[in-house]
Length: 377
Image 1: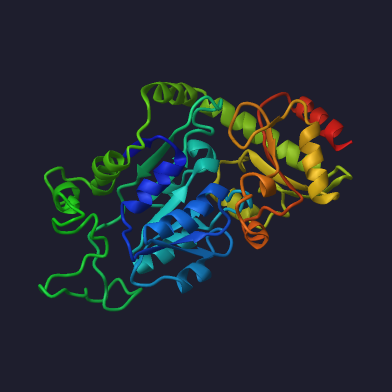
Image 2 (image 1 turned 45 degrees about the horizontal axis):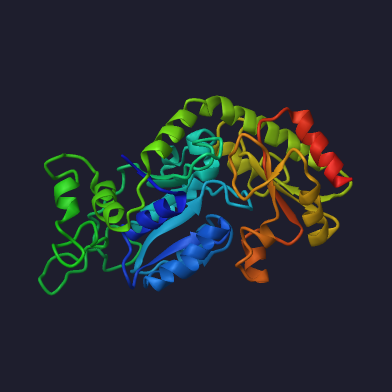
């Protein structure tokens, strides 16, 4: 089941707050979209929920070292923004099963499932910004939460952490302590009802829909981040052409990445289609054949000043913070999307000062090259 929301940021916030309360924590990759990093670091902290950042995007060893009894989920991006690292879903799922934790995945750069379908690879829940490839033209803002209905929200807190066969810890009433009390908990300050008993497989509906029902009737109601009717129309209209746009975006991005590596002003290029990208093989394993995402980054040998000058000289490409538009977009993340981070955090998030991020559109390929070439010169 799915839930439409007002934005991608509200989708991930409501999804996480659906299982986390004050005193809980969740574990997330450090290579995240700048807004997500700030939300996780600051806004959740104000709610009493801790985000524990790990190296890269899905570093299994680092994730496992940070899990404790109050950990509620593991969060990754299908294609890290802006590192473009693809997590090894198979290894992540094995770790999640060991600790009885759900995996939440931001599939925005997975093009609404065109490039990658995380649920197919065992991910329990997907969130995304529909503002991007879902609509496809940058005309509206939206987001969504998709529940695979495969996670067992009735699991208890175990006597031995990381052993699913260990006995359940019991409370003063002699009953097992619920690991996810917001979904499988008694009627109290957090509940009108026990969502799992009513909307779990053993309830009258005989379906695992407790998570998405709570997200709708509690979080969407209380936070009010619902999608508007006209925005819904635009997003549904955009979906009609997703398969055509997805292939065109992918083919252009692959070609531009290879072409940029040949330019003398360019110091480096990052895109999963390139064989020297650290997760090239993993991306081939989990993505649609030939598709590696439509966003890439490159660094200019002239550094920060050269990067800003390049953007000011582009004529076809637009200087916008969005991605997933029909048109090609360029931006300098260090001074825009990741501006609020410290210099060290920018590097950790994959946004060094010489980097230019490109959301490759589906204009004629030679037109994109010509624009970039004149800007480089």
